[in-house]
Amino acid sequence: MVSADNLNLDVLELIFAYLSGHDLTCVGLVSRSFLAGAIPTLYRNIVYRLREAKAYDTIMSPFAVLLSHKGLSKHVRTIDLQAIPRTNHLKIRPQPHSGFMRDCRKAIELCDSLHTFRCTESNVVPAFLMALQNKPNLQQIRLHGSLTPEQTKLLVNLNSGLTEVFLEYASWNVVDALPKWTAGLHRSLQSLVLYRTEELNEGTLESILKELPELKGLHVIQCPRVDQATVLNLVSHTPALEALSFTTMENGKPIGTIPPLPSLQHLALDARYHKTPSPTPAILMTLLDNLKASAPTLSSFSIKLPERKITIPPTFIDRLIEVYGTFLKKLSFLDCEVELVSIEKIAEECSFLERLDVSIPIRDVYAFASTLGSAENLHTLVDVESHVAHGVHPSLNLEMVEYLMESVPSLRKVVSGRRVWVPEGIAEDFDGTVRLDRRLPYRSRPSWFLPATTM
Image (cartoon, rainbow, N blue to C red):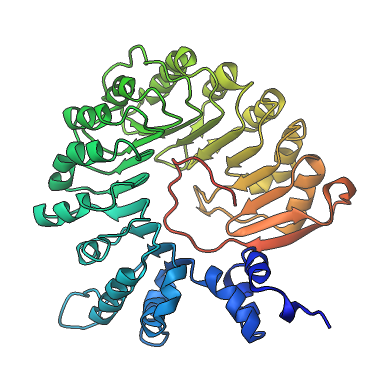
């Protein structure tokens, strides 16, 4: 008799790869064969969050499990440390829990197939640098970069085949080593992110980019000594860029002619507002005008403002649509409001728009839905986590989502907070009924400026 329990292990692994979270855990409890099929997916991505860190004394950590069952380490591809358990002693400042740090370090040493390592907690990265050595499959890292000269030597000694490097708060030691390090990565490195790096200056950034002519993604965010004009001037060294992000500063140098970026598809702007009135709107308009000839087929655009009460000027939306409306497939407006008249124009003139991330006005959700009715290819709508002047931005409910999907026939997914709503049944037979498809897992701090990934 054939049953699910008799399926080949390879088949079970393929099936269980579509599950996650509690569903995958529950499946592993059904039988021994189901557990064997679920284990590769269960341990492929180890994400250690704040809730696990708070419960460290009562729940066994996944790293302690790996040390108890060393054979499981062969399945680990990603380790993402979003939080670290800390001591809670009244007489001393909380410190990283020594037992956890020991287990985590030893577990990393066992994971020979490690592909991605992320740790943005300050003061703990140095403890893992030695364990990350000799990892031939390591390709992606995201680290808090405040390191001493000795620790920096260990960092630049990591696998020479790294494809993505994301550094936060990099110290002068790391910044000083970047040109030489990236020179050794010039054959493999595809994406470089430098986030909140105060020591980065124009000369160092130029030295870095000269070594990376084939770089596909460059993201320089909130580095106060590097303004928009500097970044746009230096991308002449990286003509193959497909994704670019940077911060626009009010006191930056004037934007001149932008070097050709024929492959650029994704642009993200971290717009700064401090002065009143601010020159930022004029800077953004100038940027769009100059980009038109440099990157003629931009398909993804994101912008983030520093104050949630700011409304994107309709004139900027009009210019964005005029320049890129026929190419845009994804638009994202973060920490700001977009007027309904602008939403309507986006829906009407961005005929290829597939995804829109925007703060949905809950009080005017029905009017908002009506303005989106002409969006023929919009399949994903994301209600971004924003705030309004008088409190927290409320979430969409079932009735609102159903009205949105009735108003926008092409809409197949609505994301609100961690909830993902989809139509009931197949698209051709949609009867207006919507169901909660799943809840998104907790992830590391979102990097809004990177190209969107599938939810």
